[in-house]
Amino acid sequence: MEGWKNLQSGIAGLNLGQNVNKFTKGFQSSVQATKERLGQVSQEEITELPQEYKDLEAQVDALRNAHLSMLKITKVYDTEAYDYPVQIQESLSEFSSTIQNFAATNLKGTPLSPGATSPRPLEAPHKTLPHALTRASHTSSQLLISTPAGDSSKLGKALALYAQANETISNARIQHDDAIQQGYLHPWQATLSTSINVAMKARQAVRTSRLELDAAKQGLKNASPARQEQARLEVENSEDDLVQKTEVAITLMKTVLENPEPLKNLNELIKAQLTFYAAAAEALSGVQGDVEELSVAAEATYR
Image (cartoon, rainbow, N blue to C red):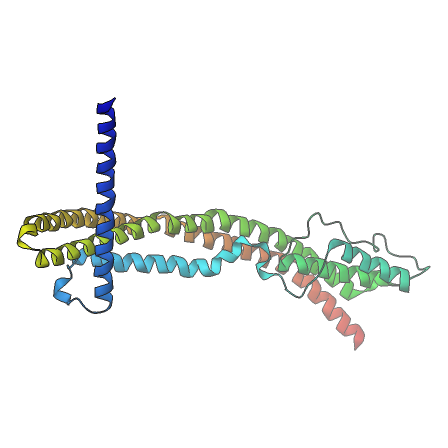
């Protein structure tokens, strides 16, 4: 029992010694960093890191900043309503009541075109610009054809065609956002928060180790004769630690810079945009000719 107590006491003393040593190193490196920041340490007293390491640092910084710059804009694709007009306050019930109120007020006793008093049912009021245009043009078309002789309204027919095109664009827009989220945005964020972040932490470890080494060198310079040997050993251990951490950081930074994922992610972004814009162009070109014919006919009638 007595031996077990002694063992526990020894372990506790060892852990305490390790904690004190970590605290001392942390304090010394903090003092060293403060002195450097205040210009109290000459450049010759700051340990020079390998040029390869410094070059990799610059490249990783550029890669990280490129990710952040792109993410600052493209993160909007995680929110459906990024292009939705902020001034619009609408709901499906509002669209339905608009037509019903118009008919009750202005068309009492007037035969209406089939289905004119209610728009086509929409399951979910998606908050995107194409969806808003679909709803607005469809509702406007219904209002025009709900009037006497409304079936002959060229603008009503044109708006119905425009609603049809925007409905196709709306569906493509949802697919576009899903593709960007899965193929580009989420993996792009993952690269930033994992491999790039790991490399940045490894660099911080190098900086801390370098500060500890330079603090140890200052300690050796100012050590008393009785502590010279201990101070010299601390410098040697700090040098070994810095070399090891620098090698690890170099390996991690190279891995990050060689990672092909960001290029693959960017390609997925471009593919999603290309598919969407192609679908939008096809939908609009499919109705533009018919709307132009209605426009020419209306102008001829007017003149």
